[in-house]
Length: 426
Image (tube, rainbow, N blue to C red; front, side, top):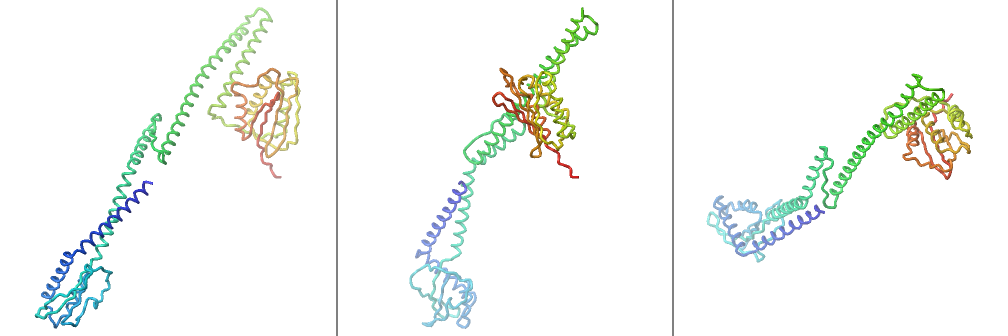
């Protein structure tokens, strides 16, 4: 818009200057005094040429060269009443359309040759067309100057705003992300400034979340170290008593052993919780050790031994396994952690009176394993963070698989999928 306004102003300026200049030239050259001055000046040049070249009746044709030099003069020479020659008889390849300075009939002037011969000259002066070209160029130049100056004045504030943004970006680049960006106007530059401000705020939010996460990690480590130290101290104390045989009878010895076992399981739960937390939220540098396992072997192990605790507590298994000719590639240690997490959930929320349903099938180049069990009546399955299920999802996703869970009324569903290895052609 600024460019368009400046361009219109420049064109109007050029047009006005050309019109004013043309009117001035026409008024001035149409004036009688100016016409007489131009005519007298032309006659003076003619007389000077005659005296300089000694033009006589014998070499009167020399006047042709004078007429050729006078581009803006129309002249016809006469002797008595017979026309000798005129400027119209002189070929001129550069002849331009000319406008006479005086619209009246052409007057006659007496001209004396060098030998005293009298001739008459019918003479008319014309406006120099070069003046029109000069006026056009002057108008274009003035219009261009107006365009540049006006455009500069209009965009000067924008240039200052851009320089301001450049200065503020350098401040942000130096690390001071809390420095506010200047938001002015409502155009593309303003949108750019708003985008930079939004990006800066996003970085600040991420940095704040990172700081909060680091603080939470430190608090967690501090809390976990304290929580681990308490049962560990008790465990060491009971073990010392057992080692030194400082118990009264077998019943007290069994009581000490029971306390040791309880403290050991408490330590295991805490260590598992700490591992799960860092597996989900921390950076993992561990490299998986993948091994190929037939799908059928994996499901047999899952149904026969992995859910041993469920069966030991009196629960039943219903395994519906289809044809599993494929092979998968997994890290056995981390897959075992997935099964341990699922077993832990079953102990907390599973209803032993209902069978634990396990279904497995191959579809779409994936091994699908679906686990379904009924929730124990009166048990709330909502975890504070669902850290165990998130741990399972993280591990399965690292295996390029999928892990989902959902609750439908009194049943809890878990489905995991692992990619099948391409079949080897024999």
